[in-house]
Image 1 (cartoon, helix red, strand yellow):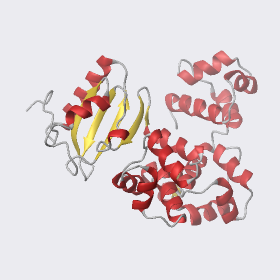
Image 2 (spheres, rainbow, N blue to C red):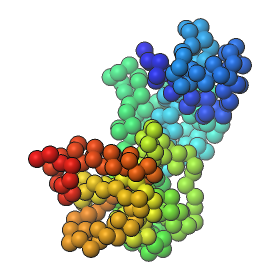
Image 3 (cartoon, rainbow, N blue to C red):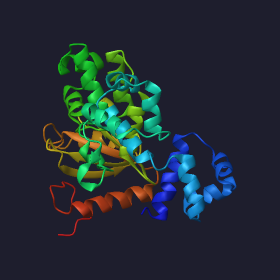
Image 4 (cartoon, one colour):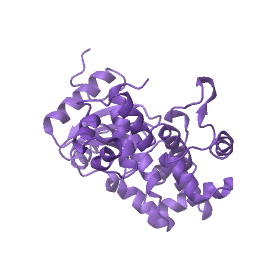
Length: 307
């Protein structure tokens, strides 16, 4: 059974997905908007009767499968219309499945799995599988599909977009799951196409750390792709092994300083990720925590590491 904290989160996410206000949900359940707010923050919890009403109003029984369908679809670089056409359904039907307004029949799930791959773990009574099982990133699948549709090589897309060859490779392979908006904008402009918002939403959701923000990937060897924001960052080698943890009130400026170090070169440093943190104390705490977690495992900065 889902605990109260998990249920509170599911309530809020379902309400926002259905674009309902707290007052509107309260009206369906027979309580005030303030009560819904308290339930969503975990201050109080609905009783069994209220919870059953909420489940019906927010379609909570169907949302886990709906999220799985949406995630698998965008990773396959398919629009709702394209998926519906392949299955012989109408686009609104797919939309209703993904939002939880309705649930696909067992026959429909079987058809979906023929196109999207497994949506349920057959060994766990039909429960959705983990996100880690889905495979290629939503953005990577889309870029790969659009590039091949134009008959371009990776090198040609890199040249036309101004994004490095290695960055394109890493995006398409899924090593870079959530590239910077500026990088994605360059790729979209070169392709003459726009990634659907739900695909971008899936990438953002999977990269977001609740209470902190969004973990974003970038190319540390491309000056233009370095983030000009305060935060904590990690540099990785070609096998995506962390080799340096750092923090700065301006990551781009700090990386410029790194560039003068002998080790800050390709292929020693191949990829990087960062999370924007404006509070200086929190940046220091996060950097120290990450370094202590990594201990002596190939981390080049030795401060805060007990040996």
